Length: 452
Image (cartoon, rainbow, N blue to C red; front, side, top):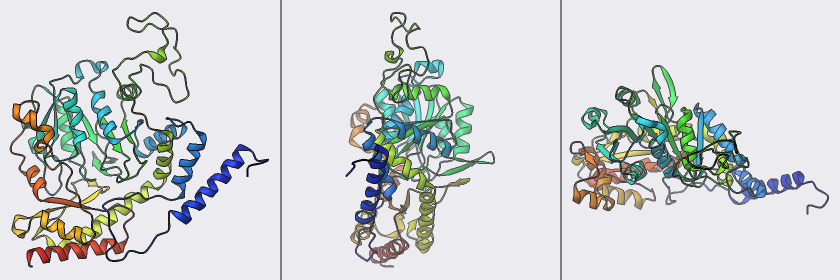
């Protein structure tokens, strides 16, 4: 098949065949019909992702390589940040973002065991887990409804002499009140980590300038798990404008190395054998000097190759998510006497991850009964992740001992979300027919279950 062909010609022929295969076998779309399952999220791709994936496999570098370096550069440019570090998952991104703030290189600003971090319990656990795993203390404040983000009115009550950071997520694409949170952090010399895993592409207007969420705090994180705004299968990113934080993140990601080199390079600082480090012999190989107790959280180049193709499509993904959310919001507008519909945070332009709905007490129906009927019509739903994280078994020992975390107030809205809230998808693969069917079936479910 490849006789008398250069490697480049042979590769081009293979990739053309991959593109034809993808179009023929993977991209055939059937029209939506009633009874078809509507998932809350799914991959949206074409032959470019598959060709990039195979191209990377043919290169057979396997670990972090040229596609990863390309993605980091293009993703940084897209967000308008100086630095991006690609990692193997959004959970790893949150872990590195938090652990970077524990580095001795930050001197008196480093987070130490016993220090406090303000966060929320209404969300995904990987925003909170690194805090507890390190031995710091999460301080939980309540959230607002219908924005479903941290209640900034409780920030001052959560503050203590041990507070070192705020670590919170933008919920399902809806930015939290970044103006108030940023001013609070600046005033009290606190770090701000934006968990941007469910909000990639969202924007917030601060001081007259519209910026992407994840780029306003000290560190931002993203996830590229299949349901998210764009995918690599698995994958995540940590980004910042701070050169020192970027250095620390890369060190922790790459085993704790003191000098982190791009793939295939021996040493970036140019001083591999001519320096003194710690109590090592003079001239010890800098490539094997460790300044942190780190991890191996690198992404594979095959994942990054998929991400490069996804990034090309990403602006259209954002617009489709916004359009789908707006169609749902307009279509369900007559149900406010039974349901609380979501609202965007002020000064924000969300890139929506989902459409949140809270069942009102006066609706005369529980979330479980309503969701049961909606799911019965083939529409997939999700709770707002943990609901109230401190009610989960992982908190049993700490709850019994009364130590390891603090709670500000009653977390009334957090409990309400745990009991009464669910969401449906708005992902770019949804058609107008699917959106219209979802609206019709939700209205039908409300009528059937409430008798009105």
